[in-house]
Structure formats: C-alpha cells, structure tokens
Length: 429
Image (cartoon, rainbow, N blue to C red; front, side, top):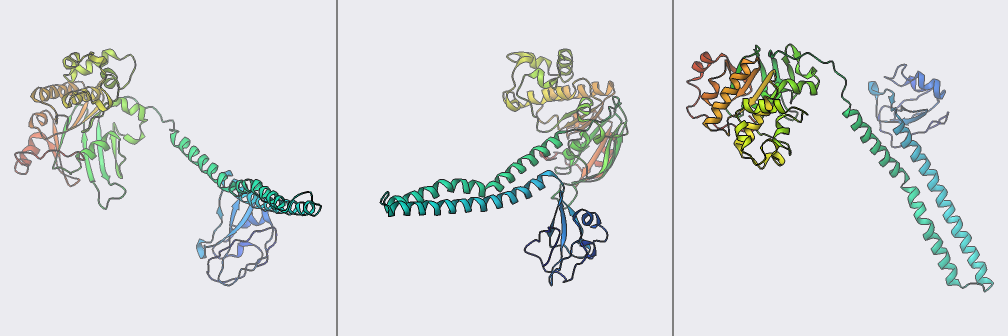
C-alpha cells in the first residue's frame, strides 16, 4: 500500500469489497463529500487499498489515522474529538520511541561496559568475573527505567480514565437552573401513565389516568403486586414514567426544581427511613428555625405527646434508620414529616400498617385536617376506617385501572370482588 502526506496505515484490516482509492477519501462509497475538510487539512492522498479492504479516516486533532471495519453506507468519517484521545495517541507514540531509545542506550552501555571490562582484564586491571558482574549490574540498573518507559502508556491511560470519571461526575452534579413555579394549589392530574423497568418484558403500570381537585382524597386499593406503591413513587416524582405524565397544577412533575418540589409534596413510603439525627430534625426535614412548625406537624399527626415521653423529647436521637424507635413511633414520626408545613400534595403508602386503633383515629383526623386546609391526599390502604375518609377510590389490578370513581360507588362495585380479609400489602406494592 502506498501513501503520502504522512498518513499512517492501520493494521488488522477487515475484509470487505476490494477497490482502489485515488485522490483522497471522498471516493469511498457512502462517504460523499464528508471527507473534503479532511483532504483540505491533510492534502491529497493516493493510496491503493488491497483486495478486500476499505479505509475510513478518523480525525484526531490535527492528525489523521486510517481505521477499518466500516463498509458501504456506514463508511463515514468518525470524528474523535477531545484532548483525552489526542493525549492517548501522543502517549503511545512517545512511549514507542522512548522505549526504543532506552533499549538502544541499555544495549550500547552494556556493550561499552563489556568492552571496557575486557580491556581491563587484558591489562590485568580487573578479573573476568568483575567484568561480567559489572555488565550484569549495569543491565539491572537500567531495567527499571526501561520498565517505566514501557508502562508509560498505561500510566497515561489511567490518568485519562480518572479525568473522564471526574469530568463525568462533575457534569452529572450540575443541575440546570429551572424556573421557580408558584406554590401549587394541589390539582393532581395523571395522564395516560405507563411505566416499565429497563429489563422487564411487560409494563408495571399501563394507561393509568385520573384527576383530583385540590382538597380531595383518593384511596388506592388492589391486590398485592398490582402496582400501587409504584404509582405513588411516580406521583411524587421518585420514578420517571416511561410514557405519560404526572401533573401538579398542570405542570409536569418532572419540570419542577427538585428542591422546590420537595417543599410542596409530603410522602410517607411503606419502608420508613429516618435519618440518624434528632426527632425534630427528621420532622423538619433539616429546615433551620422551624420549631413551631415541627410541633404543629407532630400535633397534626397525633404524635406530639408520644414524643414528649421520649428520654429527651424532640431532641432524642433516633439512630440509624430510626433503629431506637418502635415501628409505631417511626410511622407516626414519618407521618409528621410528610405533613410538615402543610404540603399541597400528601401521598401516604400504607400509613396504618404499624398503627393500632388510636393510630388509625389519629390518621383519620390528620387526613381531615389536611383536606380542610386544601391539601390533596393520596393514600394506599385496605383498612375500612382509613378508606372511609376518602372521596374517591381507584382500584388497580395487574398495573391497569379497573375502577375509579366516588367512594360509595366503587366500594359497592368492588364489594363482591374484594375478599373479606384483605391480603397483607407487599413491600413492592
């Protein structure tokens, strides 16, 4: 293969249709005029591509290399931009000639040492053993330098990989500045919602749609595995829908700035996670100077007196995940955190699973207070006492809405379908 303009030729060419390339890369089938800028920068190339090979240029800064393996319509210029790639190529080139230079110097010095030793041995100024020992020690002394030069490319590759990871993490951490929206009134609209995990073969939720006015309460019911908990995570924005949208006051939940959205939504998941801090810090979501709002939220959740009975009251350390508290305490404190500063939307996933009769009463009172203050409430529950406080019921089965409407109407419709002893709710909803 002939080449000009200092064009390096790649090795290990893949066999495709054989052809002759003259006057530059522009004549390769499928490339069209895409290579004209390359030809202007590098100059005319007169190369013969052997039978069964195709040549594709790759721009590396100011250099052009020849790669292979792309044929027909796929034979297009691959522009590899960025200083990292240029640095890799330069490191490989530098390591190659430096390695050759070091090997030349090592062999030359060993030859000189051997000749000098022979001269000294002839003149009886050194023994033959000393001659060979000196040559051996000189080779050993230069070997680490040769090894460092040989691994220089690996060192540069490791540095480039580190810089890529660092730059990627820094780019990921940058959250674009989003416009602040006014406090929502609580109108919730779920529009043709679909959701599926990446590796799943079917949708976990499909065509889910309903709407709630501010101050309304919705009860979500259905058998285990119907997708109830998944739906609550989509409503609060923890999960991103595969299709469709969840809207709060007509604004897509995904368009809200995350920090601002958290102020307007209260969420109580099935698995309650408390931070390793005080009770007050967990209820306030670490908001400074919020003592009055913390007490108000605890009173609304019916846990104020229970907190006062703790060893240090609101200053009691709850431990990692709330380990020092009983299940009922954790659930009531999680409820107080969800209603902190009266969010516009409150989503409760099985809030009564660890509550006794007094806890159920406190939950019903809390829901009534939220609705009176204009908050929209979505609750997943099977307990009749809890569902008696909602306006509408949505029945899910196999990820689809089977019934939705006023509580009395849907309860009468489902009375023949729902078992008298409801199944216990699973963690994955």
